[in-house]
Image (cartoon, rainbow over all chains, first blue to last red; front, side, top):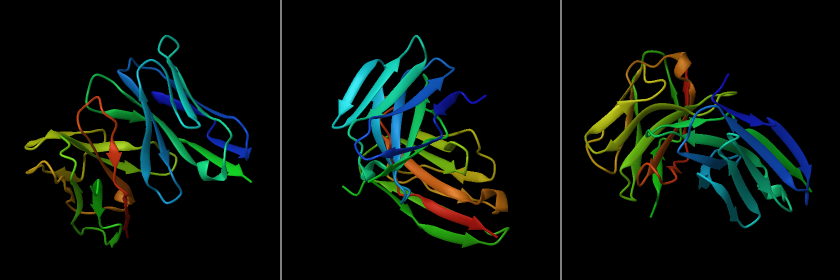
Length: 108
Length: 112
């Protein structure tokens, strides 16, 4: 069993839909990261959080430390949100442990 | 700022050849890492560095060497390329342990 599990693996949506991607982890962590990888391959860090909730534009990330669970929400989804969304956790080390990603396709 | 720059973007090698993947950052970041990304798997850490002169192994270090002679540069060397090293390689940097990482655009490497 991977230390970081994401669900779903693949997700399709119609433009405008509210989207949720989930991440569960099995280890104690110091922070959780959400990353976005576009079809061209580049990876961008979206959020880094250790408690509560963060919001940036139409993206919202939440974390529940007790339940070892995080969610990434996208409101009013748009085709340009189509990408692979990756969850990663950091422990009290310099290393990140990555999930395998959720592939999102948003259709007009 | 250019951010994290990786070269080359694409490379094809024959089994047994050696090569160096270059990574440079201009953000004065202390932390730098190399990852490989394979289909169906999450990014896996190859080697990392917490500052000039300091490197350490990650999850999958075999077959790779690194050095960190300057803060800016963190090259990854393949000593004797094997088909199992066919992958997409990403370099990343961050200011310190608690800051988000900045990724390069990746190097797509094929070993024949």
